[in-house]
Image 1 (cartoon, rainbow, N blue to C red):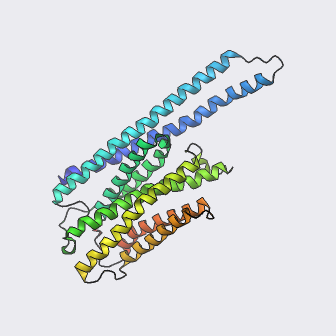
Image 2: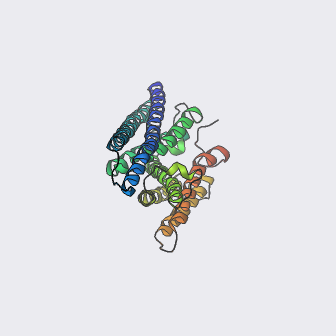
Image 3: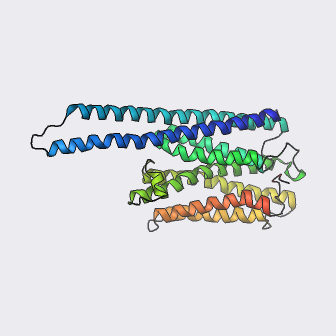
Amino acid sequence: MSALSDQLVSFAILAYLVAMISHAVEYALGNARARVAAPVRELVGAGVGAAGGGIPDAPDEAGAAAAERTARRARMAGLGGVAVTAIGALLHLGALVTRGIAADRMPWGNMYEFVLTGTWIGVAAWLVVLWKLPQLRRLGLFLSLVMVLLVATAELVLYTPIVPLVPALNSYWFVIHVSTIVFASGVFLLGAVPAVAFLLRAGYEQGRRSFPYTLAKRLPAAAALERLTFVLHAFAFPVFTFAVIAGAIWAEAAWGRPWGWDPKETWSFISWVIYAGYLHARATPSVKRNVATWLAIVGFLTMMMNLFGVNIFFEGLHSYGGLD
């Protein structure tokens, strides 16, 4: 089962890579469609302004047909990217299930397993978002890129052979605390993608045509990306709050104190404060949306610090990363 889990992770990475390429093709074809349609608009404008009022029918029809074919191909590529993402999510889930069976426990015992589970939560949440809001499909290019990077990093850098849980983790609180913290982390991961995309798209809509704002040319409207960012964070924050409280209760039972400013506890508190600040800023009319969104991005960076930095560079009661 362990070997099967490793193979399924590799196939999932490949699927996410194919999905990323498919979404990139949709992006490229979207640009091509704009180039094809531009001469048609010029012809129409010239015809309206001409004395005779007529426009050549053949170029207009040919250009429109070419633009329609390009749009159809772009849509097929985008839908193909979504389908392959769903296949990757199934492979990803299979890797988690087989790893859990091989370990005879929930697959959350070290950093490698935590990243695998958190990224799967992010992909699953993304597919739910697409089911509700298919018009956001082009955001899949950035989401699939993030998944390729994170899952590949987990497999190539963080991989840890299956070992029994350390004694402190042998508790029913392991399931309660870690399941909620990994769920919130996965949704926060997804929420960081439209947050960055919103800042880029907002800059593009304000007339900025330099890199990196040009990357957002084919993204959904900034307002839609900002709303998605808020909804995801508003959904994940109560779960994250419960996870922190559950962790304090578990710490009281395991170590005799609910809070001791262990490095992971400290960074969890920092993340909680920043995410709370984001939601407060988002609900305050006088705070600009881009300022509030920056808080969400900083919050995610603190989550990454808690996951990678604390596990790698700090020693504490939560040192279960599994890295040598």
